[in-house]
Image (tube, rainbow, N blue to C red; front, side, top):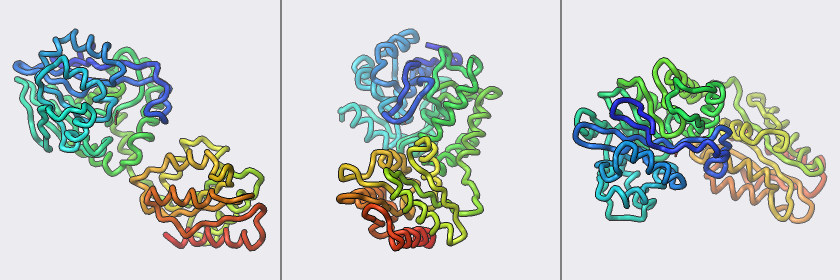
Length: 397
Ligand code: FEO
């Protein structure tokens, strides 16, 4: 337990050993599941909960402040199980309690606890909850990072609880940023976290920043990583979100050509697709062999692309695994309707191209035709078709 301000206590759990978050996200510096007890003159509220794996540590931290049954209200800013996984166990100890969350959050919390007898109050933007000298004011903040997200502002103490927003998968023993020992490592973790979690939601990030700018506060209490204070890391964090969420103005459109190639045949097609794009004169067409680049940077390029092509040989009746790793990083919300095309050389049966097309279609992207399948070494005619495919991609914008 750590005292943040009088009557505000951090009771969450530190997880310095975590190295992979949510199955796919590298977390070099661990993470924390921050949860806060706010004690007013009359009532006590718990803001966000904790990952289920750390329940005993979490409970001990709560008990350093008050017995669990002294909690009157639970505020759920966001209901992903890293913040609500321990809720069901906690409720067994807390007993009857009122839960405050958004309308979407009410649906999620019932599914996460498998209980339909909970006392849930859904909150709207501007609703308040008086604890006695401490007023919780709820701020709608959807898609930061799920549709259910809200912020909770405590004006008397000038603090805002933002859950995922402005957080970081970063763990040091003390939560306040003024105690941070390795700010450069934090900044690296902060960028990685933003890229993985918030980059797909840029318009919502900008809306969230505007909501925060309208509030009077000097401290942000996220539910991952350090507490951010004015004059230390708060300005840095908000400035970076502002910078990273601002759309970049490019002189030319970006149509990358992603590929892998076993014997160089699919590479030949990729080169012709790129030549076709470039022939239109108004787009860049970087050629990117998937095994030569970091997958995280490829995802960044893919999710900024105006259109793209992806090529794979067929092995074991499918596209090769790096192709699937690439497509697993598609921002399915921001990239919907982006024009794209598949191509590839094959030896026996050639399922890679239709399988890629099926995946792109399921992501609701704008797939151009059936793509281009070529048996073994492309002929001059095949390369012309690949060039025409590139031209069609450029013309589709
Ligand atoms: Fe930390 Fe979206 O949960």
